[in-house]
Image (cartoon, rainbow, N blue to C red; front, side, top):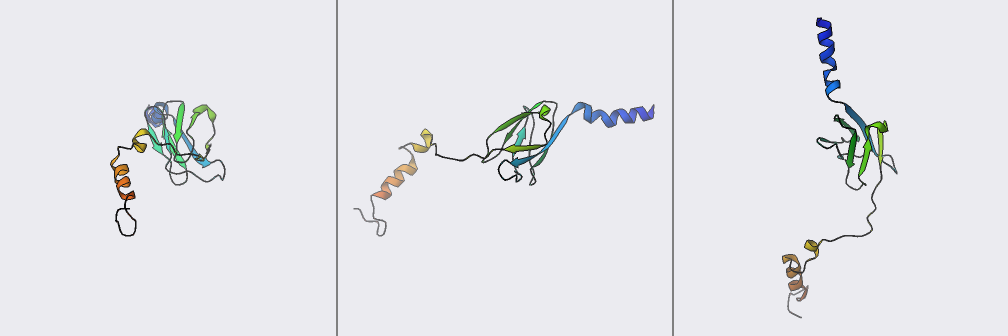
Length: 124
C-alpha cells in the first residue's frame, strides 16, 4: 500500500500538468533565440540564453513572441522540440497619430530651434 501511495504521488505532477519543452531557433542561421515569450492563455515563460524553455500547461496551443521575429503559434501535437522563427525585415516605419502630431511639445520645440542658426543661435 505504501508503495502504491508513493507511486501515485510521484506521477501526480505529470497528471495535473503536462509540460512542453523546446528550443527556439532563428530559421536562417539556426542560432538560439533568447528572451522570447512563450505562452498559453494563462501562463507564460521566457526562453533562456540557449533558446530553451519549459512550459507547464494542460493546454494544447502555444504562442511565441520574440523581438525581431514574426509571432508564431503551434499545437502540442506538432511534436517538434526545435521551433524555427522567421525574422522580420522592416521596410517602413509606422508612426501613430501621437508620434506624428504637430501639437507635440517635441515638435514645437523643434520648430523653434529651426528658426535659429546652428552655430550662433541668432534668428535668420
